[in-house]
Image (cartoon, rainbow, N blue to C red; front, top):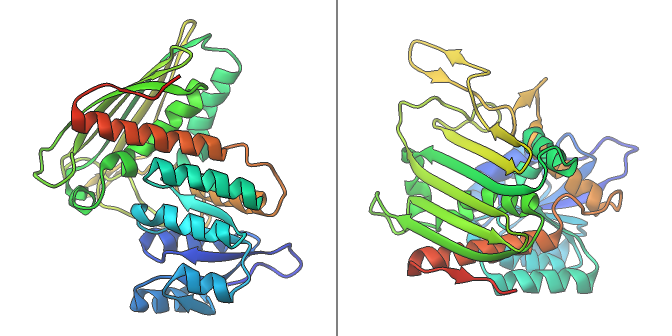
Length: 349
């Protein structure tokens, strides 16, 4: 899998070849990169991805890959709990990194990543995809221009199909899978450190992890953010993810910014685009990874294109700085602790 001849080529290694890893590979086809190798423990899946995307080398572990291949950028698209370990391996090898959210699931690990990246002089881009969506960026621009005045409250609601939850409810607390999106947006919009967290969770499904979560975040500049998430949307709700990665279900996400001189809001999927058939109604969202003119487009392509430019030294890592990704891990861990202990958690300062 090569970029067009004559372009400056960044050599990329994939760590993870699941469904979302394959989506990344579809995007990378249109960027000035060469995917030189893939790391995937499942031998059958690894071989299938190598064949589909024309990747010459495949390895069961990232350590083996980095010991044998010359790599500029490692794209980590693995299980959430493995992110930290893989990012640290890539940093130790002197590689730049783009890692799907979350950066990692442990605060100490996040601090090691930050220290290691500084020591080795490499960039780490966390794939907080919302920052690359036009609607969410417009909200940030409105704030920066002062149109809303002083930000006072940030409201986030993100709900998902109930049928999706078993895939996550046995694996990881949803604060790391879905909640991290709105945590990151809160960090981005608040523009100050988070000082305290209070969260409440409930388990409706009976699985190990909760399927409803509410959190209140207080920031050092007195901005207050509320985050609500539930995996309870019924099967009859409209399908919202169609195209390059199609899922039969719903994401219903709303973001609201309240300032002392105005308000603004954005809804991820809505009835602006509607597809009706005899069997179902769909409201395909056009922010995350829509297919446009035969190519995966939207926020995911912007995110990966940005990471390639950062790795190539063509721009600064200013959209999702590593410090802000670490802050998101810090807040997510505090939310999980608060919800489990039913108590307010102070983050100091």
